[in-house]
Image 1 (cartoon, rainbow, N blue to C red):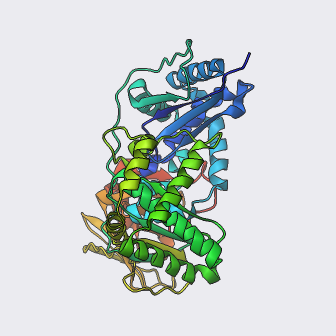
Image 2 (cartoon, helix red, strand yellow):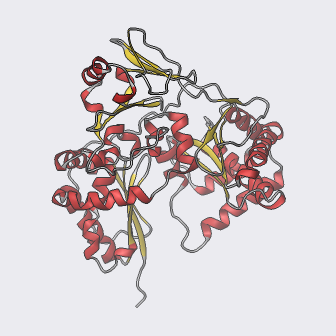
Image 3 (cartoon, helix red, strand yellow):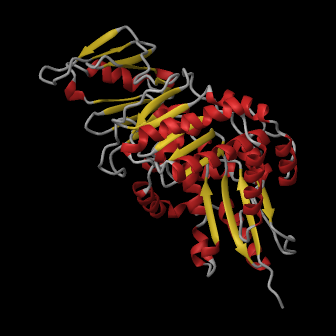
Length: 471
């Protein structure tokens, strides 16, 4: 008798965007603890879980009985989270964090959104330093419940499938707002390659068509015609449209210019009919490939873009896409181009008309008491602070200011060092020995930074200090 193979996924509407920066990683902790039972399953390799910006996914493939037993065990684990394993799992999580990398897409999101929402994916999981069993259990009870979940399955629902999750409420997708920035703009990044971020308010079909047309053109030009990159791709996610090319530093300037030229050409003239049919045919073939992802366009729209209020099938998409005119695609691309944010490697010269550099600091100042650099510190810098906030002005002329309530996280080390991270992505480290008579300043920071923003950075954190840009 032929055995039926199924795929199924349980999705919770909770992800990185729901975490405050000091608690970054708490959803990841729940996911690891909840999946501990899989180590006892012979089919553990058919199960998987991921924490994404807006959702957390638990998926499994196998026979009907495998599906039922997996979700029964998962629901039991989430209802009674094995928090006694937290010390052990923290070691695994810290190892995973130490070996993972941010990447250009995550970094461009932190410059676009700051230290909140989508920008959080570019920051360290500070919650691993201090959160305990009570915090993690409370998060699981609040967010991983029946009211905040959806289950899909690729075939007939197994008769014995049960999902005894605790009852609870749904948490709507939070509004994700970019920082107020003058765009088009560019900045120099610490990663290799070139990345381009475009925001879009277009409907799901138009946005998807624009992203597919751009991907087709970028691959044809940068990979094949100009040989400036090996890997090129375009993603349509909650952060809009992001294009990437892994160009070498010596080719990055030309790759960036080609990226911009491609977007400007689509914004000016739209697409050709044969070009649209080619990308639609390619999309259709990928969907029909055995083992292809079953994630629907509706799922992507609801959980990532939040762009639809009713269901949309791939057949609907194909029909709506073919009806798009070149002028409609051009207008949507032009609107997205006005929001462009380009990331290029450090030390790569860049000058394209219409693109201005992002400011290196936010320029906010708070007049009040002043602390100057310590003698011999080799700095011509000052720190000003008041009841409203604190600002650090360096010898290079840059100033970052932090309103006390606008501090996303305050990091502290036992040697007295403090680091302030603003919701806008700004970051400054303050080392006591670098300043003359800083006692009153450090006391003001201790008293005025909200208590829920503090993060300990000594043990059990790694001894390597965070870098100054993303901390």
